[in-house]
Length: 184
Image (cartoon, rainbow, N blue to C red; front, side, top):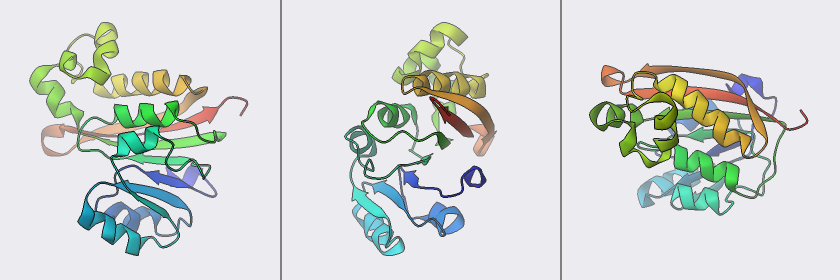
C-alpha cells in the first residue's frame, strides 16, 4: 500500500516495538507514532529520530488531533482488537485532509465475532442491522462497508479495498483501503 504514495507521511496508531517500522517505514522521513507502554515508547523514540512520538491512549490522542501538524496520508491501525474507534477518531478529528489517504489495518475482531456475534461489538451494531448478527462469515465485506461509511463522514470515498483473513483459525483480518478525498 505504501507504493501508492510518493511521499508517505505515516500515522502509526499503535507502535509496539517498531517491527513494522523496521520492515516497512524505515525510509519514511516524517511520521507520527503513538504507544501507551513505557518500555515500548522508549524504544520508539530511539528508533525514529525524525518522527513525532507520543505516549498516550491512541483513541484519545487521535481524537484530540495528535499528528495534525502533518498532512498524514497513510494510517496504520494495529490495535489489540477493535480498530473502528481509532479509525472513527481519525476521521472525526480536526486535521489536514489530503487528496489520497491510505489506511491499513490489523483487525482482531473476527475471533470475538465468532464467539459472541456482532451485537456484542459496539462499533459494529449498525453493521448488524445490515448484515445480521453473524458478521464473522462476511467480515471483509463488513469492513469495506464500515470503512466507506466512516470515511464518508470526512468526504472520502473508498477507491480500492483489499483484505484477507489470517492468524490462527483465520481469527485476524488484514485489510487496506485507498481513499480519495473530495475534489480529487
